[in-house]
Image (cartoon, rainbow, N blue to C red; front, side, top):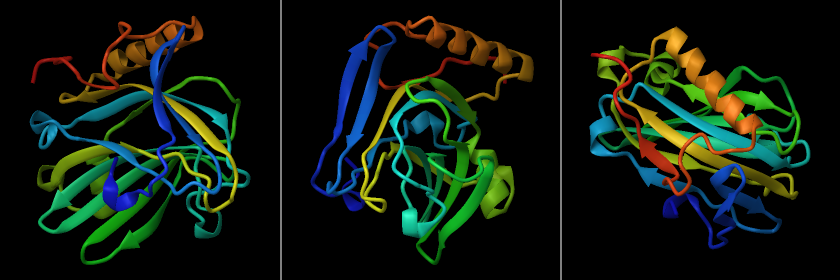
Length: 223
């Protein structure tokens, strides 16, 4: 639990089924929202080249658009957190209920905290696994500026499913997080995503059952 961003209601649990273990988030109003997270392994703080995971929505918060504070809920969100000195900078990748996908919005930027939302998906079919692959360090440069070699330390990965702003039920599942310390070649990346998608469609885990929710990836190509 990320204490500074969470209330007392823990609505997350680890479940297992025909498609492998996953983190199930089941928000019900009037729960306080809770962020679940993991501290970044030391080896990835300066070398993170990508994050890959699967997620699916079970219930969209009604009218939820995380870029609009009045209805600022998302069925699923994944945080990549960086820190430079006393300042924390967050890129949150979300699956919204409404509004266009493939857009971003700035929700905070002050002396000690900055937050950027990136809408990967909006709406769509329920109970359908989707695989994502993002490069948070390159996104950091895109949204916060600077050079790739000057990006501050990647310090944590987190998830949030919420429905407090819309006062509605919100549910999602998360699975198979992989941290990459080398950027895959485009052809290799497409092959990996296709394989993961085929496994998900077949209703089996893309990794062995019992693997932890977040894993360190082996080297995928020479440096």
